[in-house]
Length: 243
Image (tube, rainbow, N blue to C red; front, side, top):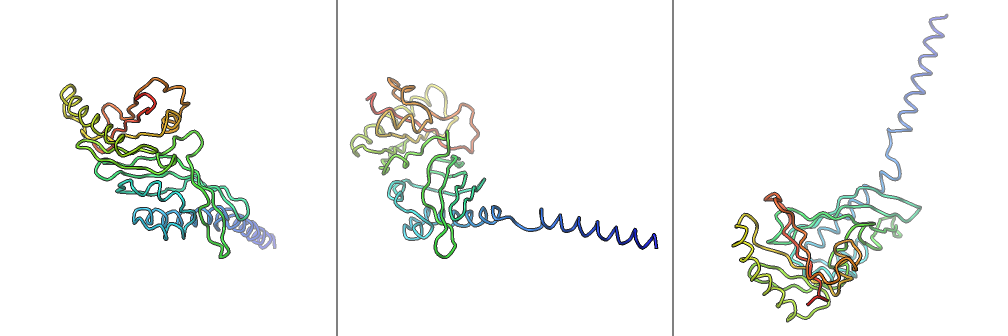
């Protein structure tokens, strides 16, 4: 009898343990499910961006920003969801955006983004808004529609400037690149991406710092000395107020 009681007790304990395991880790939580669902939506969104398919972007949420980025020559664009904070039919997702500029970036630029989402009538997530994560820098298309000008050694991306003005920056970069190579050698890509925001406030936004830090400074280079061969191209961020 004592042996049977011990056996029954063992079965009860085992059942409790199994129940606990199933309750705690055996089934995905609502947050886990939301994270996977949001990742699928952002995968579709990224594909639509690369395909320049505004209608497909609109199927995943807001597409009002598409014109702002559409001129940028993209080789890759993807999102990696790192966290989802859900509240009923709305959610905020933390994600890493990785993208490459065609012909310039040999590795992706990685930036932190925050996306606001809602559930539609069919229970599918859609993007309401996308913005830089807290303390993360803006991307140029966050500031408006990007115009693109190509130089011999440079790609100039600008917001709020004429093509003529952007060509002048391309000319400056095209003269500077050979001069840098003469002084420091050719052990670098010898191609640069020049970002020309509308104002010094925009410059500060691209660098994630107050505009007052850059008043009187003509430009800032974000590349790193000794960067690996597979790396994003050097970015030169221009203060248009200094020209």
